[in-house]
Each structure stands twice: as structure tokens, then as C-alpha cells.
Length: 323
Picture 1 (tube, rainbow, N blue to C red):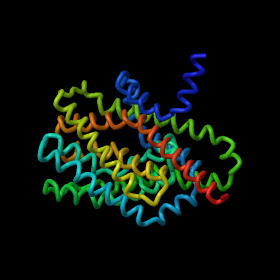
Picture 2 (picture 1 turned 90 degrees about the vertical axis):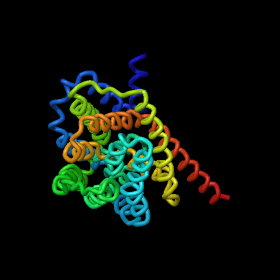
Picture 3 (picture 1 turned 180 degrees about the horizontal axis):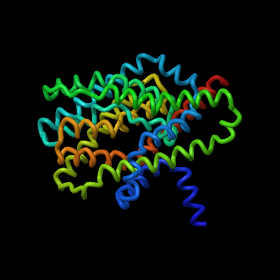
Picture 4 (picture 1 turned 45 degrees about the vertical axis):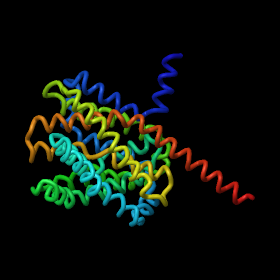
């Protein structure tokens, strides 16, 4: 009875895999740290299975909405990082760089799966991932030049190759498989999702184990309070991004907000380690990444509420047509 209830709870709240992955990576890092070298392989597996469940027509439709892409990319890649950096530069400069690096990143590669777990629009998440990743090599150096007066080059070839290997290639193969074996793909739809979820949990655990494996993470009361206040401030910024694309549905707006929250962790750690080699900065980034990932499960209820609002609006429109 208890096992059945736990199974039902997990099936209805599969985003909890993020929390389980974080806990596993923290408790037994030695188990998962070796798997960090296979992060690209896990990403390919995740995106291949996720792509089998995507609709190409939806991707094309979202890609044509230039106003949404302009608003979202401009807010995410330019306005958001500056808005996060400026108040800290004035009141807590020791944390300004960590928030600037984090805020300047494109959307994380696994966002399509997370959007699926949230009940959001996976195709929209894919489009935002692609556009932000393509623009990031231009916006990141510009941001650092404006804020700290120093050009920080982005590993363009590495970023683009990662984008191609992790997203484009598995998407092409998945699209081909759907065209030649549609019944096979549809028959095992449940398993594509489950494989993605398991691989994602392992990936989270591996990343956490790898980034926290050099010692215990400590945080002072002052820093904890500062992070908490900044999270509240970020919630306001995310709310702005939600209402910014007012013409889209609630679930689409929730997906956009999620893309702004879930950023490319790997790239942020790479830039910090490469151009700002400071143990304190790395610790700050790891703390922020852990906190944001821990807050993802509660975000699911917000997304569920958005989906529910969409259903009510559709039902209301149908009733009006009948009348």
C-alpha cells in the first residue's frame, strides 16, 4: 500500500528526480563523480528520447513568432544579467560576479525534458534553447565589457559543437526514426519518457558530485540571507518575463519563465574557472546552482496552475461559441 502510494506520488511528480539527483550527488559523490565524464552521452540520450515526443509543426510555429523570440532573448541575455548584477555591485560586490555569470548564460540543454515534466511546452523550450545558445557567444562578451570593462571570450566552437551534438544530431535521428517507424515510436512512448527521466537524474547527480567533490560547501548567515533576498528579487524578474509575452497562452508563458530560471550550468562553471579562477567564486556559483535546482520541484505547481488556467479559458471560449 505504501509502496503503491510512493509510486503514484513519483509518477505524478517526476520533476522530483531533480531533488533526488542532488541528494544522491551530495551524499555519495564517489558513486556519481566518474559519470560526469559521460555528461555529453547522457545529454544525447535525454534529447534523443525527448525528440521522439516532439512535434515539428509546433517548433516551426514558435520559430516564426519573431516578437516572442526578440522579447525573450533580449530580456534573458541582456536585461536579466544586468538587473541581477547592478544592485549587488552597489550593496554586495563580493556576490556581483557570481550572479552576473549565472544570469548571462543561455538556457540549459536539458530544458526540453524539464518542460515536459512540468507539463509545459517542450517544443517552445527547444526553440529558446537553440536561439539563446546561438546568441550567447555574442551577448556574453558584450555584457562583461559593459559591466566590468573586460572582454571574456566564449568558447564558440565548443558551445556550437555541444549544441549540435546534444540537440541537433539526436533531433535529426529522432525525426528520421519517427518518419520510418511511427508505430514503433508511438508504441514505446512511455519508455522514451522514463529513459529520459532516469538519465536526467543520473546527470544531475553526476554534475552535483563533480562540482562539490573538492570539499564541503559552507555558507555564512549573511550570505544565506543575501541569496534568499536575491531569489525573491529574481522571482520578480521571472514574473516580468511571464507577463512580457502577454499574447501567448499561460502554459507557454510558464515555459518561457522556466527557461529563464534553468540556465546552462556547465557553461557558467567553465567561464568562472577559465577567466576568474577563484575558489570563493566557484563556491558561490555551486551554491546558486544547487539552490535553483532545489527550487525546481515547487515550480511545477506554478506550471500546473498555468495549464489549468489554459484549460478553463478554452472551455470558456467553447461555451461562448455554443451560446
